[in-house]
Length: 310
Image 1 (cartoon, rainbow, N blue to C red):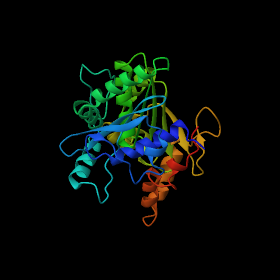
Image 2 (cartoon, rainbow, N blue to C red):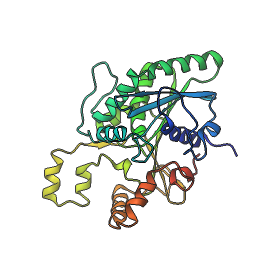
Image 3 (cartoon, rainbow, N blue to C red):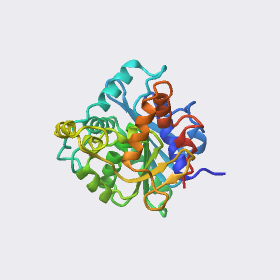
Image 4 (tube, rainbow, N blue to C red):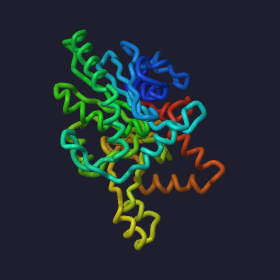
């Protein structure tokens, strides 16, 4: 049975981890199934890679429906990845004190400085040029089809999706921007999220079971009402990074079913999810491994891979 568009975009998000330099993106042995077969590319994706240790990467491809942009997530701490790249990438993730964009950028509100820097570095490395070429080629070959740009990514890549999508909304106002982000971290504050959702309404973020990454950077004021004594919560709230989610949540339960706020049964709330994650973490033998597995997208048993996407 042919894969749905969302499952194909998941394959593409996973293939970003095969990027090892600029140019064509090879088939990724970790793809389950391989994106080169199931994503439906019209042409092989072409990548850009940036920064001193190549911690930021993305590719642009064409699929029958339009242009696809896929952003790589944080470099996994695994054998086979350069240690310097791992350290630089994880260091960028921890740069969470919210900051403003440049006057030349279309964003509103405050953003994660590390993710914003990654977005800028990808543009400097040539991402804009790849997108321009792909858009022009698609219009030339299919002038009567709807103009669409699809943006996808996993983890850190899922967070940067919002920055890329908003820039695409600004640069290509005649195009419909479609975002499918898997296990995305948070990228901006409430003002950012409100303005972004108005600009790019077709954004779905998929979150699975006890995956902790979609809750990061954690909102301390929200967490304070769950686990922290009032006096400590008040102190921490003074430096609360104040992050908010963008897009529409599609929560994946352990059976692979999708739960949304629009249709019961609805996704579990913040308190229930954080409590469940804490329950796993107190089991040092199995808990951390289970939570890490909840975030993965490269094995058939992973929740994101098993999900019944529409």
